[in-house]
Image 1 (tube, rainbow, N blue to C red):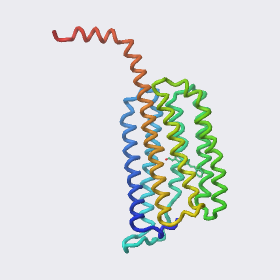
Image 2 (image 1 turned 90 degrees about the vertical axis):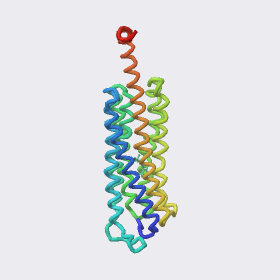
Image 3 (image 1 turned 180 degrees about the vertical axis):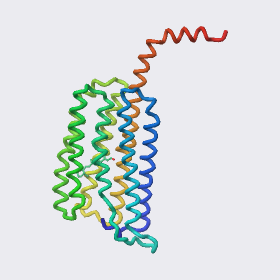
Image 4 (image 1 turned 120 degrees about the vertical axis):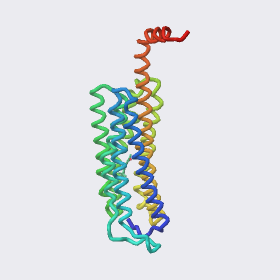
Length: 270
Ligand code: RET
């Protein structure tokens, strides 16, 4: 990455985007974990994982921010490289850990049969990890040809995941309770929509986008996409779990309603 192509303004803007990313991911983690007690036990694992994903991301945003701060010196009013490299591996390590978990969150909150859960989490999680691993060599290579080859290789599991989400899960989604069907469909399209951003951005250097504006677009763009794919998506998972929990609670309270009503009657002041 040609950091000296940045203006001080662009450099700070990116630093602020990382800081914002850290704040959102850390706050989202606290929210998911603190609110977990509101969720029925059957859906708590999904929410624990949702919080883990944002926790891992918060940690990486902090590391990215520190690495960004150490890579250049702006005290002269210009962006001067300090010689310490900006570590791009943090993003990929983050994705490697969190992208499979994001798909696992979705499967867990659907609460499919045990066998289907194992099958789908393994296949989708495995494909997601493969997609990230195949993308990395191209990301760090300076040869355009190699970048393109790894883009094509990484697109194979990507297309497979999209196919599985849209076609493979159709039947299972149709069996979900009416109250959450819509939320699950939105979550699936949120995954596809936010994930599409990454392979497009990856191609920027190949279509001649360079310089400070391109670096800014890529770094800020990845940060926004990460926030949508992890925190916003997490809120949807949370809403699905919450609605399903309320349904379980609703069924339970219908059973005990007569007793509760009778108690209310007797305790009413006259
Ligand atoms: C790469 C390499 C080029 C081809 C493809 C890619 C896909 C990356 C994706 C990343 C998703 C990241 C998420 C992060 C959440 O915070 C690796 C850029 C297909 C889909 C969801």
